[in-house]
Image (tube, rainbow, N blue to C red; front, side, top):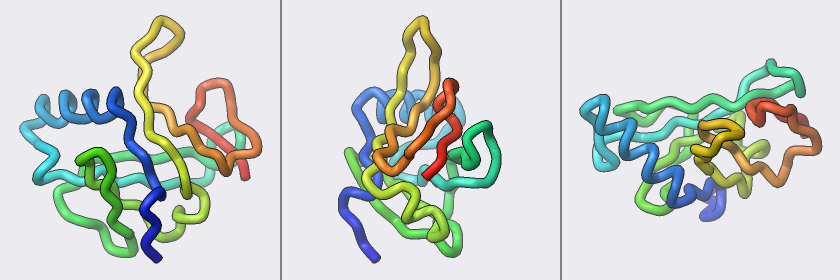
Amino acid sequence: MRLNNMITVSETAKAKLIALMGEEGKSLENTYISVGVESGGCSGLSYTMNFVAEMPENSELYEDNGVKVVVEKKALLYLIGTTLEYSGGLNGKGFNFNNPNATRTCGCGESFAV
């Protein structure tokens, strides 16, 4: 399954990813962003996100805005159409997943239900 709009990466998220990769001696050219979901959090499911050098098994590769994103196959249905964003405002800093599939989210934005 190849979905072009699986994950969208905003400009602010891309800029923060580049900065974080640079701190770790990594770059967009040789690093993947691995995204998934796991049980837990106050709404039932929570997001996972890590830098990886190699594509994990049981994952699909997508690219948006020059960022290579790998999504765990078990998370594909939960993440279709999701936008990865970054907010650095006073109300909270961090990456946010704007997920159109979520029927309920928690206040911290790290947990959701479908």
